[in-house]
Amino acid sequence: MSEPVVLRWQMPAPIRGAGGRVAACPECGLMVRLILAMDLDDHSDEPSYLTCPGGHTWPEAAIPRRLGALLLAEILESDPGLYGRLDELREIYGNG
Image (tube, rainbow, N blue to C red; front, side):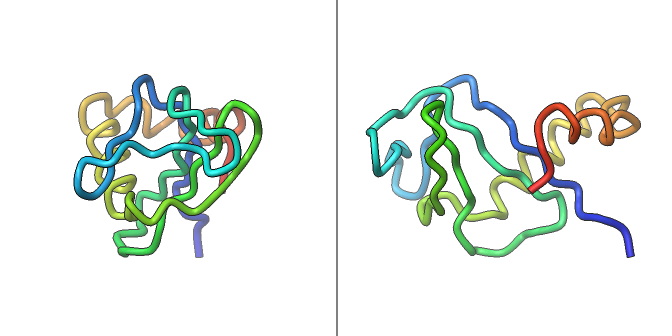
C-alpha cells in the first residue's frame, strides 16, 4: 500500500470555509499565511488541519478535507510535472 499524497502548503490568502467564514487560529487569531494539510485521497467531510505561522495546529471544521483534496488535484492537473516531484515536495512541505 502506498503512502497518501499529503502536502502541507502555505495558502497565499486567507482561507474561506463553509458559509464564507475566514479561518483563524483559535490561539493567536492569525488568518494569513495559514498552512493547509492536503490529502489527495481524503474526500471526507472531516475537518482539515491548519497550522498558523506561530506553530499552532488545529482541526478546522469549516474546511472539510475534501476541499483540500480538490485543491491539490487542481494544482496537479494544472502542472502535471509536480506529480513527479511529490517526494521532493513532501520533504520540503511535510507529509501529514
